[in-house]
Length: 282
Image (cartoon, rainbow, N blue to C red; front, side):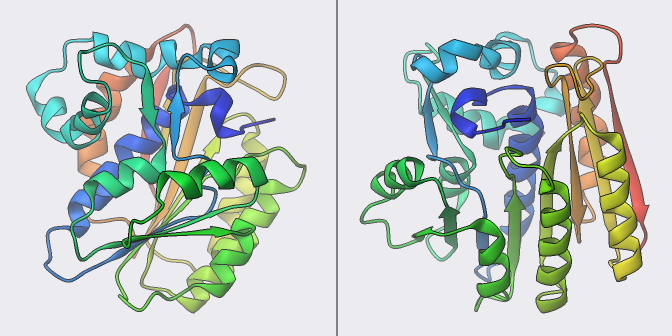
């Protein structure tokens, strides 16, 4: 697997990740107290859908392209508006050319008192990311391995917030590293919200991660899945999942409204579907 952000911006996986991220931030803004968002594998923050990388795969056309072209029913539109408004504001005139990665999406949804910490290890990607947020006092960009960030930056001084984890899955053992980092981070900050994204290509790796969470004593663990079709180790990615620790109590219900519609719009063949499961109770 290779999930470097630039090649897959706006794809089916981003649809799930960014719909969830926007709902998490909306929930945190219900209270006046400031919060912090950590993005452990931030990428470049913004993507040109006409670039060589995105044109090579064209995956955005089966993701955000379909979403923006579809008629969104009112209950779904109400929940997706925070995310989709950021996309539209980035593309005045209606032609889809730029897509906000998680950092830019989060930044556009923050209030003046909230903060964003971004870590990225890839040198060129970090340079682009850092340039994007130069002079923004609410954003801190750090050239660092995201797994080290979980150990070094938690808990935040705000004591409220979330950690978005979306590694590139370029190396073997990434699920194991992710599992270890999440458990370690949770032990340091058990009250934080952790949102973990992954491709649904290795079901055994996902099960092992979930079992490790149970054995470590994590509580209140929610899983989400969105599939446009059936994918496996030897196929392209047609589905992704997210595991959330300490998700807002509103999220499962919101996803039961959003995911059926997304599944219908993104449908590419047999195996399309969605799932919301409370994996571990509170």
